[in-house]
Structures are given as C-alpha cells and as structure tokens.
Image 1: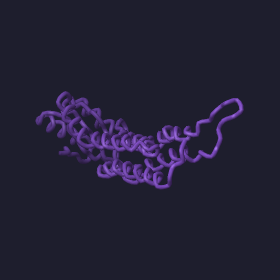
Image 2: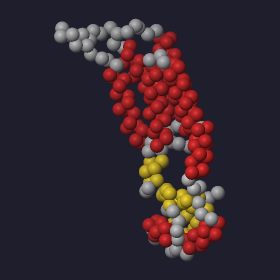
Image 3: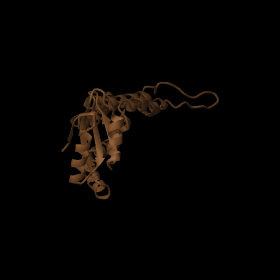
Image 4: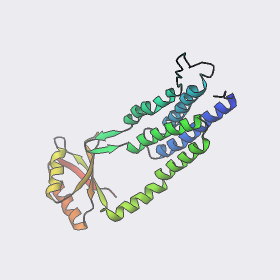
Length: 224
C-alpha cells in the first residue's frame, strides 16, 4: 500500500469531521444528547483508526516462511463492533417507550462515513451524508404524512400523578373507557405523556373528565 502524504491525511480527517458534524448538527437542533460534538468525534475517530490501520504499518513485513500474510486493516474492522456500545448508550427505555434509536443509527453511520473518508472514498462519504440528512429531514416529513393516511392519527395526553398515584391505574382506566394507548413516557417529576389513538371530540372530553376523577391524577391536559 502506498504511503499517504500528510496533506492528504489531514484532508481526510477534515472531511470526516465536517461530514460527521453536519449530521450531529441536525441531531443537536432536535435536542438530542448525542449532538454535534459527539457525531463529529465518532466520525473523526473512525477516520483515525482507518488511517492508522491502513497506512501506519507500511514499513512492516507481515509474511512468514509459511506464506501467511497478516491483514492490518482488521484494526478498522473493530470500529463496527465498538460503535455498538456507544450506540446502545444513546437508547433510552422508559416503560414501554423507547427513544434514541435514530440517534444510535446516526452514530453508527457516522463511523462508516469516517471510515469512507479515511480510505479516500470522498464520493461515498459525501453521498452517504447527503442521504442521511435527507432521511432525517424531508423524508421524515414525507414518512409521517404517508403513515398518517393508513394509520389513525394520534393524540397526546399529559398528566401529573398524585403523590400516591399509580400509573397502572390510569392506564387501566383509559382501556376501560375504550382508549387505545400507543406509547407511554414516564417523566422524572411524576409526569406521564400518553400517546393515544385519536378520539372524536366527545370521546376526548369524556376520557379527560373520567381520568380527572381518579385519585391517582393531580392534573391533566391535552397537548396540541
């Protein structure tokens, strides 16, 4: 493998950092913990591992008398395994609600983009970044519109539990009243964000009135 000039190495590092930063900036705008700096560092780190793996061993001989040739690029292959642990840390599970899957996926793809930049595949790195940004932005809007046509719309109910209130009682009462719970997110301050299949106006009013009667509920409101 030919030697790599310092200028080209720095260019690849800069490309990896810039492309990873673009994806991270989008995550930062949506208030995700893994944002601009995290994605930039992941992409940059993957690029560094790739450069070291592919070019730092050019002065070494990896053949033996038996003709066995060792592959130093296997160092870069461990990026795929290692990024899984970082991605797992971005996923938050609260009750039956799961958040952070998309951010975990963007961290994973940022590592791949960094590797592409590290090997000099600028077109692949740039094209991948563009596709990711499209999927996170315009495609997200299109997807929601398409799904809303085949799946009933949702309504979100926010409520505060009483000091001795139990979320299980609230959810059970919702089901008794005919409500269909799609997801539940538990807050740290005894709050519940419940996403329901959309109800008619009369059903929404009745559901709110019945839940307000529960001793478990301190306050509730429909989110716009």
